[in-house]
Image (cartoon, rainbow, N blue to C red; front, side, top):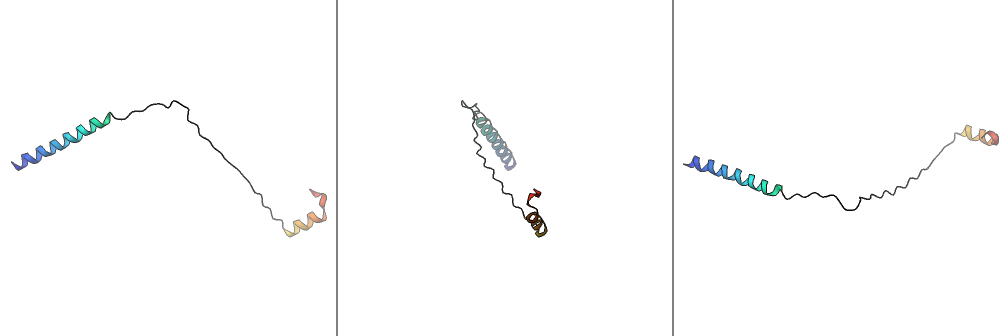
Length: 68
């Protein structure tokens, strides 16, 4: 008798979960937007160039300013 009650309770639980799943499945509504989607990309690119001269190169440039 107790076994019959457990089987019935399992069956009822499964049926209730299936019923809840079926009733909530129809609640989703997908529509296209009326206005186009606008994405603003404000990108600022800055670049720093750092150079270091070797002492020999620095003296060479100072001695020959017309090299470059």
